[in-house]
Image (tube, rainbow, N blue to C red; front, side, top):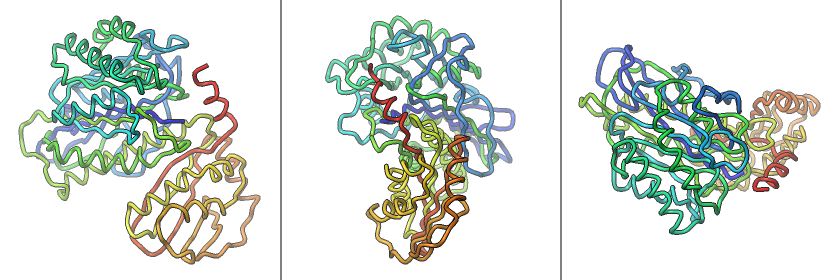
Amino acid sequence: MALSLNNYISVKIPELNRKNKFCSWRVSSRCNCRFIVSSSLFSSTMSTEDQSSNYIPAAPILLPEGPWKQVPGGVTAAKGFKAAGMYGGLRAKGEKPDLALVTCDVDAISAGVFTTNVVAAAPVIYCRQTLDNSDTARAVLINAGQANAATGDAGYQDVIECATAVAKLLQLRPEEILIESTGVIGQRIKKEALLNSLPKLVDSLSSTIKGADNAAVAITTTDIVSKSVAIETEVITTDALVTSDLWRSMVLTAVNRSFNQITVDGDTSTNDTVIALASGTSGSTRISSLSSYEARQLQACLDAVMQGLAKSIAWDGEGATCLIEVTVTGANNEAEAAKIARSVASSSLTKAAIYGRDPNWGRIACAAGYAGILFHPNDLRISLGDIILMDKGQPLPFDRDAASAYLRRAGETHDTVKICIGVGNGQGQGQAWGCDLSYDYVKINAEYTT
């Protein structure tokens, strides 16, 4: 599966009385920090009536432990955000929503992280150029059905026309609009259907949970669940501004710890996009240092939200029966640990063994060894759940029936298989997430456009 991560992230750090939205704060006593994130991937839909749950349920969001709690509301949980989702006739089958719009009442400090695929989709190219020329944005329009990738100059012109049309309806400048697409590569946007739907989509904008839920479903493709999350935590500041350079650095770090650490089949989509918007309205002290306490709190919350969404994406992999979480410790640094973890999570042989409930730890050791990171084989330690399979480079006797039962229980309940790997005595630790590889994966992808 080529993950088309058309994600949008809104971040709010309001006071107790729920001040403003996105990422703004002012130095104060105690306050609530709310981050709202909604993620799009595969297919589903809903109408602007309250029907989002009629198409697909919401995903379980597997947040890491930390000083935060999940709160309702998704992308509109913070005041000032509006969202809408509706069916606009872009999908090839069914009448699930296929258009979503998220807006911010003020100029939001913007950041984007995009696919490394050379055959980048037209909306990816457009968003890169837009963010290069501006630190802020006001709205994100997302369509499902057509990826608008590998569509040449005509596909890029479609993006321009869509952005211009949205800007006119919202009374904004076209360069304040960001565009994302997900769907079949090689197909241009069904532009006439999209443009005809825009007035209704704009009229449907709402700060309600329903608006957020509708948008979350509209930006899916082959998903069996929609994905959005909001978390809240206490910090020392509220309503302060975060500088553009700092915000973009923090978003990139969070993406590298989350979306860039998930894999379903190793493919890199033409459309992968994460857009993060942070708005500050107080005009007070800016957060401008990565080493500050406030920045560390913000980074931790960004990491948590993106990891929660990233894990739900892998959990929802096509045909998957369980999530695979790989944790690597003892590496020289975080980057090396993360690379080993991703190598194991990406291993087709490991994924197939887990689907077969076969505790074949040799495949795990093999994938760790070809990750491209040097470590001494005598330092290798591997465990599956609570069962230690090898230590200090030596295989250990273990209860194969118990290990198989652990994998079987995870598959029966769509739970998590935890693989822990030690490679030395360093301080580097990293994680990656994937899913098992089932027969259904081939069936789903073999019939994707037929």
